[in-house]
Length: 294
Image (cartoon, rainbow, N blue to C red):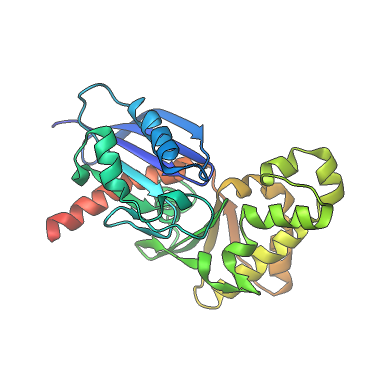
């Protein structure tokens, strides 16, 4: 049986993580994994050059391979066109056909390039390899530069698309992303930070502004309560860079939920960014199965 080489990656607002897998149609082995920070506010050429650099580092000259990338919404995943415009990150990629761009830069066929929603890939990875095994109904939330959401109902995993759902005086992403933390710290302390990592690593900021996590916990609890009215999840799995700071907000979130008599299991992904990498690998088989049925 011939071996396949697949590059499977997770692209976020602050990073790109790519794994090199080798195997056949049923079993794949992770041979290498690379992660680099990226500037998602950079011009198109710089972003693409950075992506291409890490991808080409994982393949040998003249090697045939498939590429699957988990990338945030809004995005035309079927046609490979970036639709991110007003979220700040990747705004210079708006309207760009990334399948054609990457095909040209990498020298592989467009038909060998696949895209999947990053939150959907995250939950696929968790269901197959992590905290979501043998659980029927799951809500996956990736908390980072944006808000990603995915839903598992029975055997079906899909993008939740909740980032733009009405919430409080705006949309959910306004209250459950790095941008909310940055704005809160600036408004309350008049200190400019890049994100949650900088907050928790700075003792002075934590001394003055640790209550930011109390407010975030309340936001998260209120959001979960709202979602549970429509989708009764058995478990919620958290991912994304903000979830790494869970010791500062998760217990408070559970407390707020218990006050509302809502008892639900919330777990933080142990796979981290590997969840979306593994999930994007799964997506290739999903897309190829669909193509064979068309």
